[in-house]
Amino acid sequence: MPELPELQALAEGLDAACAGRAITGASAWQPATLKTADPPLDALVGRTVTAVWRRGKLIGIEATDLTLVIHLMQGGRLGLTKRTAKRPGRTVAFSLSLDGGEEIRLREAATEHRANVHLLTAEGLDRHRPLTGLGPEPMGLSPAEWKGRLAARSARLHTALRDGHRVAGIGRAYASDIMWAGRLAPFASTSRLTDEECERLAKAADLVLGQALDRARERITTTLPDREARVTIVHKHFGEPCLRCGRKLERVSYEGYELVYCPDCQNGGRVLADRRLSRLLK
Image (cartoon, rainbow, N blue to C red; front, side):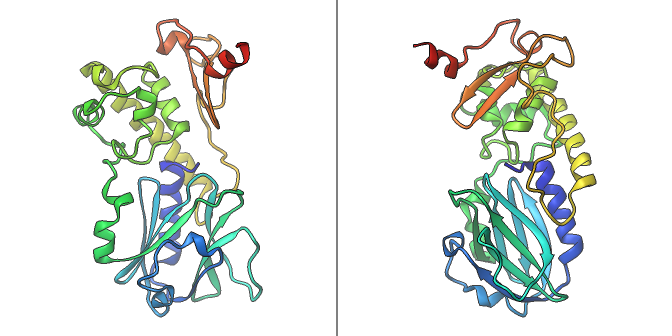
């Protein structure tokens, strides 16, 4: 799933390429992708794109007094491409046509179509729960703010970091790398984090996300690639040596993803039980 760095780079690129351009058409090629009916899509025609922005994992395309809010979910990809006279391919879920012969396309190749688009008025935007329920952006968040967001209700750290209601925009990949960079135990209770641990967390989040954003800006402009060419430290590196201490990286497997960590650097030398392996041994 695209996370804060990739989506921020994409929003910046689309804003530079599309702001000031007139909208000539809008189509929901997969009708279920569009989750709103009022205002209708054709209300966009003739309006001008005024800005493209990111908040958490959401992309917003402002068109004067209306805003398209797009959530790519796991398999959605967004990009600017040349418009053709033919109907777009089956993976195209939504398109926004612009003057100059280009369009912004939302594609989704996954069998489960979860990407969604909302067209909202200013009042609707203020009430849109996927936006209003988001926590603050993690970059630049102070240690005290981190502690306040995480300690409000207890959870495992690796779960809390991916909870957009606490902090916005972090997913599985960067949560794992942030915990490694901060030498933080993935299963640590958020209600018991010390001030010193929260200071390490704040520094690690700024470092990991800042470096990832710099890299994303080098390879992402107006189109999100199909393949996530991320440079990660521990995410997807199970079994490899830790870059800091050399111990083999371990994992905890969940349905659809895995948590990778260093036992020595993050967990006092202890290996966490891998639930997938435990089930196989029963």
